[in-house]
Length: 272
Image (cartoon, rainbow, N blue to C red; front, side, top):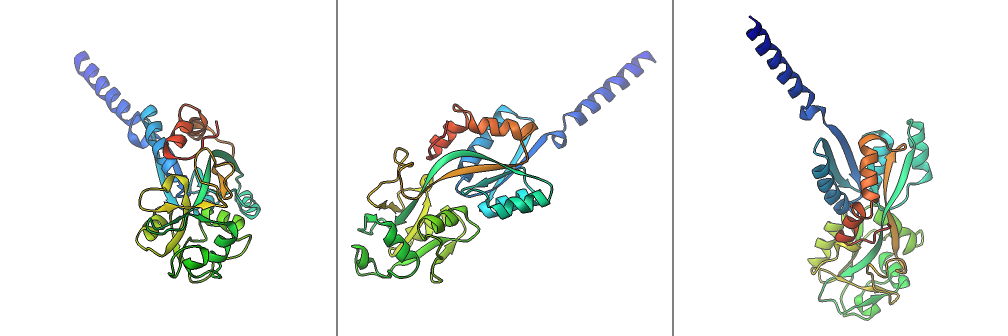
C-alpha cells in the first residue's frame, strides 16, 4: 500500500512540475513597429532568448506609427520607432492609462539610393526636396542622363518618411506621383528593379542592388552618421517604466557588449 501511495505522489509531482514549467507559463514579450529597427530587434531577440530560454518573444514590423499605436492601444510591450513619439500620441496613451517611456538604441542615416547603373553620385538637400515634390522630373536636371525620375517613398505610417518629410521636405509633402512602399526592403527592391528610380533607406539596408548617393557631398557611414544631413536616432518605447522581462530586454539592448554590439553588427551606430 505504501508503495502505491509513493508511486501516486511521484506521479502527481511529475505532473505538477510539467504544469509549472509548461511553455504556456513562460514569460512573454511583444515587440512591434519600425522596419528600420526591425533587423536589430530580430537579432537581439534571438540572442536574448538563447540567454533566457524561459522567455517567449514575438517581434514584427509594420512601421513606427503602427508600433506606437500598439503602445497606445496596449497591444505591445515595446514599440520600435525610427522617430520620436508625437505629443498627441503621448496624450492618447495617457488617456488610455499608460505613459510611453523612450529609450534611444542607435543612430542612423536616411540614405538616398539609386539604381547601380545611374551615374549620379551626389544630391543636395535642395535637389532632393525638388525631386520629391515633383519639381525636378528628369535625371538630366541633376547631372544624370535624359531619363524621367521615378520617385519611390515610404508610406505615411513610416517613421523614416516622417524624418524625411521634416529634414528634406521641410514640412512639405511628397508629390502624388510617388510610389509608396511599406518597408525599407520594399524600397530597395523597387529601386533595384527600375533604372530611373530614386528612394531612401536606413543605413543597414544598403546592399549591392542599390547605389547610395552622398548628400551635400557627405557620404553616409558609421563614421559620418552624426554629420550626415539626414540622420536620426532610433528608439524603443515601453508602456510605462519597464519591469520584469521588459526591463531585462531593455537592459540587454543598451549593454555595450550585447545589444549595442548587435546595433554595430547590423550596420547602425551604437550609442554606448
